[in-house]
Image (cartoon, rainbow, N blue to C red; front, side, top):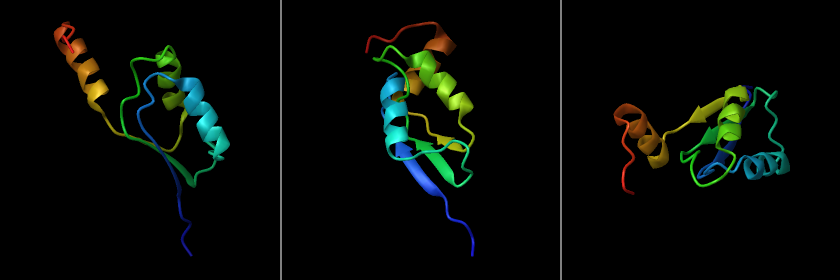
Length: 87
């Protein structure tokens, strides 16, 4: 029988690393377990004060799928154009 992945799905982290980490700990996410897959549905940055911690956390996760949200689109536009959009 083929092993099944256990999916952990989050979205709208908005720079709140501590909340993300605590939520994943509470549901038993184990980064070292190859059967655990973290799926993130965008909006990782902005608003919270732990944006860099969120980025470093994603770099450490072994089994993940990162989808781009509108906040990531805005960040990419800023990096490409050097202009902050009014919204």
